Length: 181
Image 1: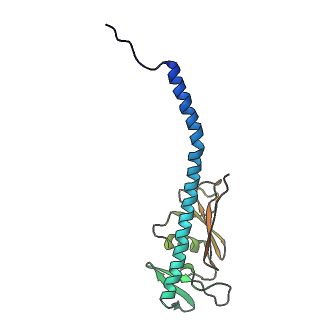
Image 2: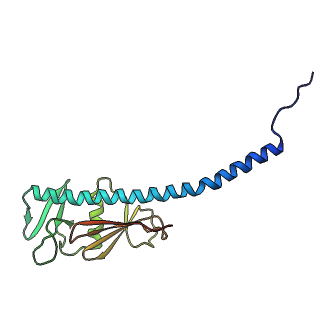
Image 3: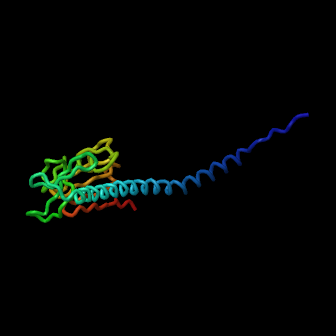
């Protein structure tokens, strides 16, 4: 007795492939959107951690009775010495981190901006100095906007400029997300 061969016909296989193709076309934009949302959430998380650390340094300085080293406000936070802003002779509020001990608390340098990112955060993401066109494997690109502002770009290519800025005069950290819609 011969058994009848069982299996799928060519037409059934083609129908399944077409249906899978249609599902893939419908689902792909959703996955792309999830990726962008993850990148946005990532920079918001890093910026939030940075802002919390800025306030923690200031709180440490306040808790220690506003210590100074000569004319500079300074504090040791998590084993790292920071110079802090001073309201004397400028429009800054006291006690926000401005760089390593010995730095000029009145004007940020590019090195100060990178120092802040690497030393305010525990397990800080890798950084490189440059601008949004810098090619690097680092997670963040550090830029000095002016003497009072540092900018941190998420290194996701020149078309996606998610970033956050630290304003030394007020201690404010603000996030700017690229508009990819």
